[in-house]
Image 1 (spheres, rainbow, N blue to C red):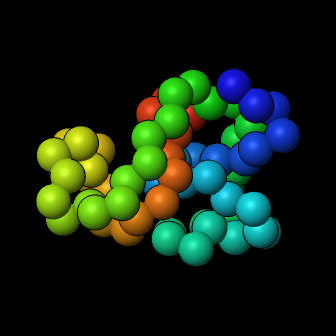
Image 2: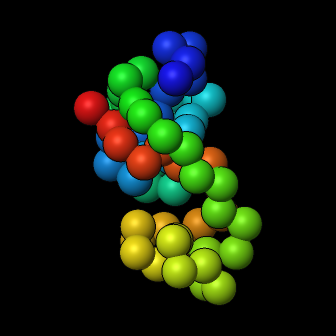
Length: 63
């Protein structure tokens, strides 16, 4: 876990700016565990089970 990276608490996507590009929220956490990289959300069973619709890097657990 890297304490420098922040994750959106709503959609669990890793974010670098002040707002999340997926859900447009600004509710972030630096406490997270596990990562998953989604390339093709429509063809990925993992993305479907996690309700991910946009490609990107996501955390599996966010506090």
